[in-house]
Structure formats: C-alpha cells, structure tokens
Figure (cartoon, rainbow, N blue to C red):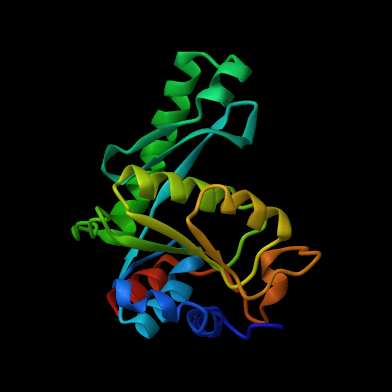
Length: 208
C-alpha cells in the first residue's frame, strides 16, 4: 500500500474508525504532518477537530529518552523511573522544561492563535499523526491527553513500524493502523507526496 497524499491516508484511516462515530470523538492532529490526516478523519466521523501540541522532555544527554512531557494548560507528566535511574538533577530537569515550554507556547500561538483548545474532559479522543516510526511522540500525546481528562485514548495512524505499535499499545486504549510493514525505513516511504508542510497549510486545515 502506498498513499498518494496525507489527505488520502486520512480517508483510508477513517474507514477503520467508523466504530467511533457514535462516541462523537475529539480528533486531535499532531502538528504538523498529522493535521491534514486528522482533518479527513474528523470529516468522515463528523467529529470535532483540534490540534494537540506536545513536547517531550528528553534527557539532556539523551534527548530521545523521555523523562517527561508537557502540554497546553500547564500539563506536566514525569517519568519517575527515568528520572531516578538517570540521576538527572532538578536544575537540569527545570532547564529542559523551560526550553520546551517556550517552544510549545510558540507553536500554540502560531497554530491556535486566540482560539481556546477544545476540552478533552470525559471525551473519547483520537490522536492522529501521519505515521509512527518510534512511537515516542504518540506516547507523549497519550500521557498529555490522559492528564487533561480524556475518558478514552485512541491512537490512529496510516502507517507504523511494529516497534511503535508495541510501544503505543502500552499507553493507549486502542491503536488503529491499516499499514504495519515488517520493515519501515521511514514514514515518508509510505507516501508518494510527503512534502514538508508549512505553518500556513496547517493553519488552513484547522480553519476548514
């Protein structure tokens, strides 16, 4: 299977999510690439659409290993095991969090403007991206959604590695993915058009 565009991938993904329509879910696109996918899913499910801006708090010397995550509204989630085992200091943790909070706030202002986020409390939320290679971002998104009161967290992706599926299943209530190849060299390999989205394109999708 090869998707022509992210929009086509979103329509294909939506065909596997019909069972969620009755829940009137909140579809959350992870910027940037997940937003056009999420737009098609929201259209098909007649669901609310919003963006979920999250930032992983990586160890200073190993950024891919998350010691926590932050989201909008001051949400903070920490991985106590990683913090304890790594021996990272409170000062270093605070420094990483401050840096990532500035970047998160910048992205929120750019993408959302003055529009407040749609509340997740007691909602079924569907977290959507254009694909998962490691699953790290999706895991962070799950943690933030739960911290914001989501009743059920579904992760929906057009393509994923087997490794990412295993990782995300441990955090989400349900994971839906039509394409899980035995070997995934990169998410972009599943698309004919995988151009780098501009902020303008993402903003336009959110206003549709």
